[in-house]
Length: 445
Image (cartoon, rainbow, N blue to C red; front, side):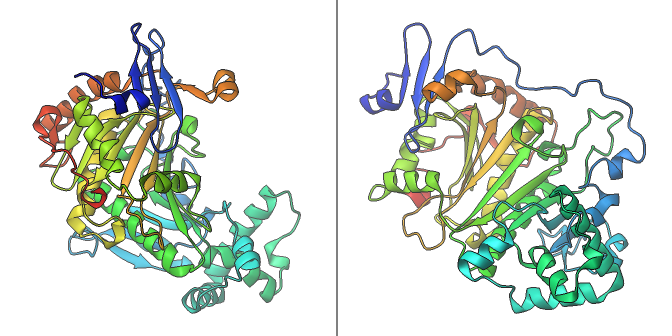
């Protein structure tokens, strides 16, 4: 189709095939240059070795046999056909250390040992203290010898990493409560999946990413992340935004090649939110115009179901796929289960199509609490297939090695194959089957 004048402001294809993109919300400039886009998406594991039995449960500090290396669990999901999470899992809250081995956690919510915004930050700058519930949990956990030993072990690891010679056993009770407070009321959590490797993996190449979860497991993973986001807002009235993200594999910033998401409460809404909200204030249709509408016009639609759409996005530093909820509600914890599951299913389908050897980041976006302008819930999946270097740093123009059209062409047949193999949720329409109308994002009309 012929590009409109508005399109040319943000997306121009030059006669030689170079595509110049400007993100309409952030202003990020991206060029896709012919001849640099033949790189593969995946980075297979180098020198894989056969898996030993211990590798499946103790390969890293997030693994099932090493639960005492992470801070006390806020909750876990365990398999239960009559459970409270999508009918497949039951939530167990605040388990004592002595009961951690009595059940198998498919997903665990634990505090991050090294917070981005520390407990001291919130306490000193905002006067935040432990809630009564968190204080009771801390007292009961420390009163149990197994719990006390667990907390001391984790604190010793933290002190050592900080270069301190301090030992937790030398702390008096008041000092121990102060030092362990982040474990019971902190604002930076990690949602950890059970598997490091897939259950049928024969070598260390068989990493278990989001696409290796079943549909039901991925729905539970997303549901727990959503409810944890709401909980962080509720537990800290000074939190203006909860950033949610997933780093998969080392090139995407992951410390461990073990599937997990992170949630960080912060006291600002963030520069990207500020920029986007300023753009759409008074014209919320901009989200539709430069999201699904643009994808429809440029044949970049990948998949859709009754509650969400997935399409190749433009104007990002890395090749990106966006998954947008079509709900009228713009905060996922307020949505019906089927609306959350709809976005989860499309996100899962894209992960399945990519495979576990593609480094990527998930960036979640929702309307910050206290903000009146709608910002529909959406997730941007960014494929870390290149590293910004001197050119990008000096010019602030990012060379994106794969064009939107090329990424779409790569992913569509993989989505079809995944559907034919029964690996993605039922009810997902792919490519030309989508029949998505303009203005589909209900919260942004």
